[in-house]
Length: 117
Image 1: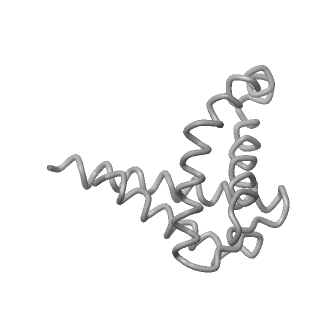
Image 2 (image 1 turned 60 degrees about the vertical axis):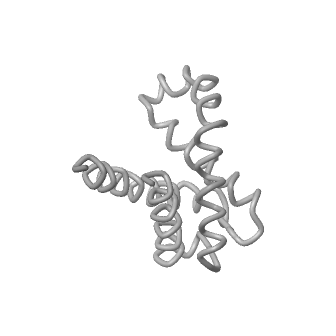
């Protein structure tokens, strides 16, 4: 149940990002659901490999390179989906920052909600 709630709230967060930032475009909720799914899969499967491969760069930049990896995942998801559009790497960076911030809020809210049971 928590996974489905996170998926739905992540799709809503993606729609919110598209509404407040013109660099990201999501036409409807169905596309947002697919984009949230693809982002989750990329972050689960591809991101850990990139983090390990770029560990020296991440260490030298004191972790700031992780923002670049997040932006690349965001941009890659837009390349895999038809309706989800990100206008360049800068838009991916800012869009992923907003989306990640909302993800932290969603995770903490769900943790509070589901830990009370």
